[in-house]
Length: 115
Image (cartoon, rainbow, N blue to C red; front, side, top):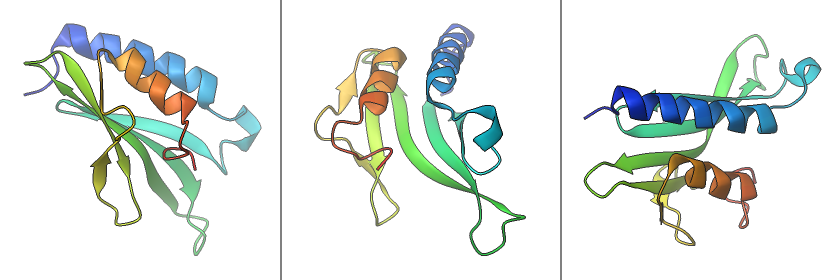
């Protein structure tokens, strides 16, 4: 089930503020930028760069994923390991809001999201 219209606006507002803080300066964005997508109940954050083999092509590297569990009103936090699978972020697997999810990602205490 997808996020409601109200929840979707809240997520977009929170992600927009996060991107304003985290995105690199305008002159660097052709070489490194950040993006996001909302798919159903999940919010995925990713890095955008030119592909090293062919710089005319762009590649995305996942940074973090938050999935909203509507029945519990909680966000589960995931990070992608070297096996390219999403794993629950053990230090803080769930939070109460999308803002809290983005705060955990931004703090990145264990270097799981930004490296």
